[in-house]
Image 1: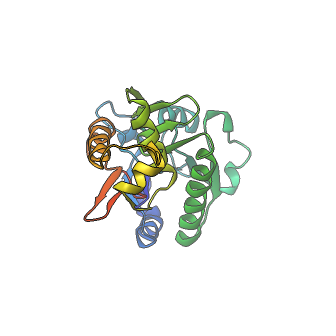
Image 2: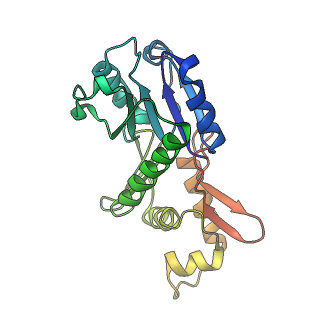
Length: 227
């Protein structure tokens, strides 16, 4: 399930949009601008942030900067909902990935968000992978969770990279040994279990689940991560 952080100061008017996203299979976390800026607020891992600018009580640029300062949201696409009159006032230098003009139907909003998330993930797989709080840099061999670096071994990285690049596909332990360790590796399948267990302990913090065990088969990188 893809999740949306919906920042709006007029939830009553935007309730149809929230309901429409839920009907289209999104998880929605609604929050006002004041709640978002409060010190106690902790940004959840989401796939996209939607900022309703129409009746926002806070300066848009200030709020956009605040979104991008959040560790869990730094690489998360930010989409603005604006009125026709507000066009021409947007500053894309503050990290805006897209905008949609109000009024908009819930179905069109959902389809646009699905396309944006798909497009960004497709591009990211060339040089890395980013999902929720997990970021993998394929070129630098670096892994970050919620912005913090994670120390992984070479084989742990190769295993994680392979699973992430084939998100949703189930692989047996034998297949992973062949793809990651190579056909000439003579170790047993327990090697895979050990590396999976170590990876999980390093990247699955809080409620996040990235690697799923498929009983009697093997493992897969879950497309719905994090939980």
